[in-house]
Image 1 (cartoon, rainbow, N blue to C red):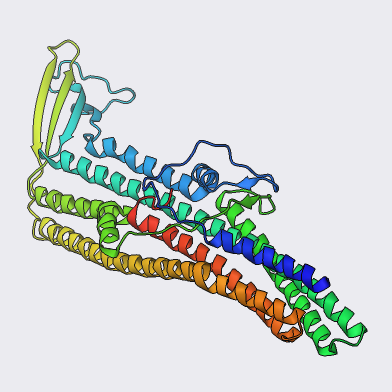
Image 2 (tube, rainbow, N blue to C red):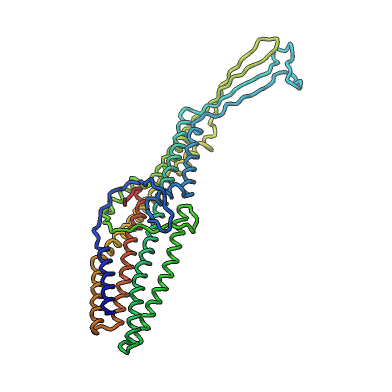
Amino acid sequence: MRRTGLSMLVVCAVVGFSILVGTAVAQPDSRKLSTPSIEPTRSASAVLVLGNLIEEALAQNPEIIAMRRNFDMMRARVPQAKALPEPMLSYGYNGNAIPLPPFDIQKGDPASARTISVTQEIPYPGKLAIKGKMANVAAESEWWNYEQVQWNVIAEVKDAYYDLYYLHKAIEVVTKNKDLLEKFTRIAEASYAVGKGLQQDVLKAQVEVSKLIDQLTVLEQRKQTAEARLNSLLFREPETSVGTPTDIKPQDFSLGLLELNQLALSNYPTLKAQQRRIDREQYGVELAKKDFYPDFSVGVTYFNRPGMPEMYGVNVGVKLPVYWGQKQRPAVAEATASAAVEKQRLDSITTVLFFRIKDRLLAATTAQRLVKLYGTTIIPQSSLSLESAIAGYEVGKVDFLTLLDNLVTLLNYELNYYEQLTNVEKAIAALEPLVGLRLRP
């Protein structure tokens, strides 16, 4: 009867897992970055919702906040760059002597006067407009850097979340199998006590139980580390309870390499930021060429002469770029070289981008194939093998060690299944910052 009861326990466990891994796959229905407006949950017993975590990270992560402030700083430079230089206000005295204080007028001297003048420098037409464009594209570049940091943080949150999901499932699977092994151990001990079993069966079962206890200890430590990592991304205290992740169902991922590459060329924030830097350097070349043309200054002067008619003066000045060989021409060469450097960096970013996309896509598709293999073939076959071993053990045709080996094998396959399931999601999460789009709902 003990063996029959154990048989029913094991069959229920493996059938339940087979139903889980056999769940029909579903297609993702959204690629856009969107997060639900739901308050994040921190109760240890609550269900941990990924969307809530992403929303909280976007609102609380210090790196994201710092990048937003950096963009605000760059945007504030745009009107400054387009503004004229500050005018200069001057006060002076004309005369043969300087009676102090104050500057008194030498009465009877028509050349003696107090002067107040205002002078305004005026850059050559087009220079300020170019400076404004340079500041504007620099701010745009910083915006895309800000977007990239958001995507990176989202990917890190997802990676930490899927790590935590795997560890919860691994602890669940190992605990379930430890309970079964403990039942095996009691059966082996009972058989040995009545002279129908072997001592090595008892010892082997005890060793396997101890190994699972050791495995659970390591998994629990890893779970706590994963929780602390997740809390750090959300700017929480490391000891904050995070709850239990929601269950993950297998989903197909059908996007190919060419489609992902095209999405990346259109949406990868780092690529857009670099393109804005190239624009800035090209504007810099235009500005350097404009420096061959002179800037101007216009001034107005008021002459105060007590007892005599007031006078006014106007002056116009021109800066002469006579040192163009030492200044303007090298400046153009410098700006041209800087633009070429940024273009080369764009090529480098694109090359690395395509490699990273292929690497993550291969990881996702490989893990996806393994999930299907474990879920539809290996685990069902291993479950049948365990059931057969149990049946054989009950009638004395299979020894205890074979039964034990089948159970441990099924345990490892179940752990591999959940590991590959999370590997799929982690690889897709790593693709999202590269294409600048949501690839999972």
